[in-house]
Image (cartoon, rainbow, N blue to C red; front, side, top):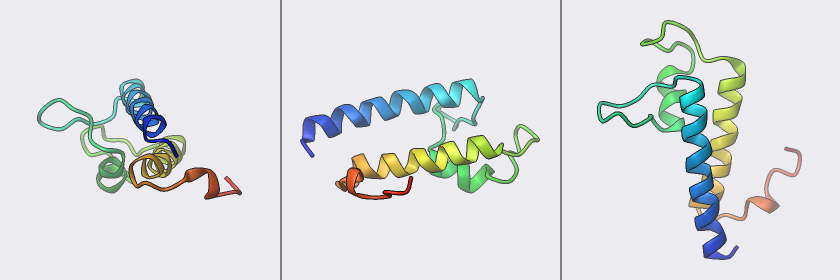
Amino acid sequence: MNEWIKHDMHLWLIEIFNDFCFKHDMPKNKDGEYLSASDILQKYGSYMVSYREPLTDYQTIWLENYLYLWEGTNGGEDISSQGEDI
């Protein structure tokens, strides 16, 4: 995949992640930045301590799918050839 396209995909993924986090009031770190998708799933997947409610199924699935796409743009993998059943 062309590196420029991967860069654009990376920026687009950052934008939609921040939008998702804003709309779903996801937790932030001490610097005011949203936690990463993997941190949210690992730390708050079953119980969001600061919000006293669990992630919904939709939020969990969205974050898992986001991580799949993130790895495809960051990890140098060609995501078009993976996960044909998705």
